[in-house]
Length: 187
Image 1 (tube, one colour):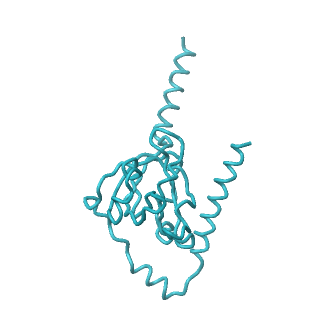
Image 2 (cartoon, one colour):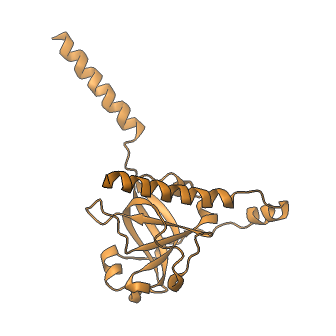
Image 3 (cartoon, one colour):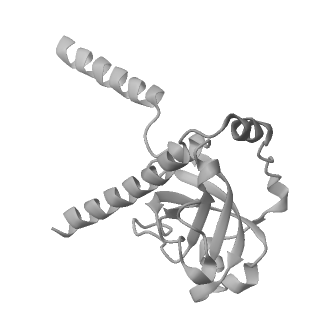
C-alpha cells in the first residue's frame, strides 16, 4: 500500500511539472517568439565552478551562498521541493525542481533544493530525457541557506552516464546469448 501511495505521489509530481511546462508552451505573439530566438543561452565555463561534494554542501550551506558550484549525483525525480517557499522563493510557475539520490542509496536527497527555470527546461533535451539513476553533473549557484539547507539555481545539467543500457550493449548481449544457444544445440 505504501508503494502504491508513493507511486501515486510521484505521478502527481510528474503531471504537475508537465502541466507547468505545457502552460508555458502556449502560443505567444510573433514578436515575443522572435525575441526568444535571438536570446541564446550562455555557454557554461566549467572552470568557474568549484567541485563540491553534496555532503559538504549540506554541512555548511551558508559558506556557499553566491558561489558557483558543480557536483554529481544520480537523478531521482522531478519534485516541488525547491518551489514556492517564501524565504527562498522560486515560483512554481517559473521553475521546476529536481532531486538526486543520496550517495550509495536509493533515498532522495531532499535537503538539497535544486531549481531550474521552466523556460530553459523546455529547450533542454538532456533534462527532459532524464531517467531515474542517470548520473548527472549539476552546475549551479547557491542562492540561499534557508532552513539551514542549500538552495541552488541550476545553470546547467550534463548527463555523465545513462542508467539504461545502451542499445549497442543490449544487441551485443543478445547476440552472445544467441551464439551460446547455438553452440549448446550443436553439442
